[in-house]
Amino acid sequence: MNELERAEYLSVLGVTSYVPRFVLPLAPAPRQAQLPPALSAVATSQRQRAAPAVLSPLPQSAAPAVDSIATAPASDSAKASVAVPTWGKSDEAVAQPQQAVQPFILSCWRIGEELLAVDSHEPGAALPMESLFGNILRALNWHQLPCQHERLCWPITENPFAPAAGASEARDTFSSWLEASCTRQPVKSIWLMGDEARTFCTPISLDETVNNWQGVRILPLPSLSQLLREPERKQDLWQLLCKAYPSETRAQ
Image (cartoon, rainbow, N blue to C red; front, side, top):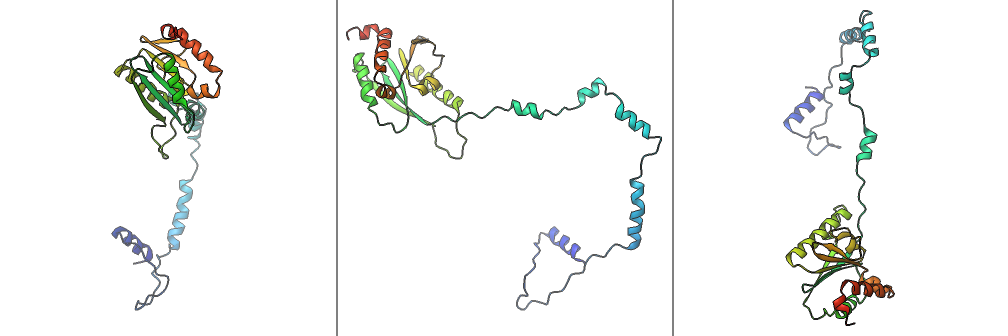
């Protein structure tokens, strides 16, 4: 048995070939395995004679047929069956990845049956936002109504191995939450305060200062953090509240 046959037998049996780098103790002296026999000169000459026959050119009678096939115009059915490469078109059709949305927090207050306020701010913003919101409720005489408060964070889960969530995922998540929340506990008004709240929570397009959604008033307002950083915007906010809630603000 030569070396090639031995290696083939071992591979079929599932035995890994092992070759020590040095002579092991009490091991027999190594010997060179028999190499496979070389090709005889007769076989080599026969193969050389057979090669030109395989690579011989076509006879002259067949040449015109080949030329006619190469130069003949393709029929309509043949043109339809030919697949045209569309690498450039397919690249254009691939949608571009969405830009990841920066993390943000939504502070949500439910004030009885009157109001659902959603305020957006950046994580770690150390501002007295709850005090300002309480003052706004006191101005509308809603400070005595029952209040429920919750916080929503984006992204919902921190997964470093998952791709960053885009704007469509955030919009689907928070708009569905707002619709489900209003269906479970209806309110008369919704305040969407800040860019993230207006962009990702609204169920309709906010074209007016006071928008109507299934009988619910939706007001796009500046966030509490924006009001604290830019106090001059409080005047515009109060004028909008007076327009939307004339009876609540008449005594002010």
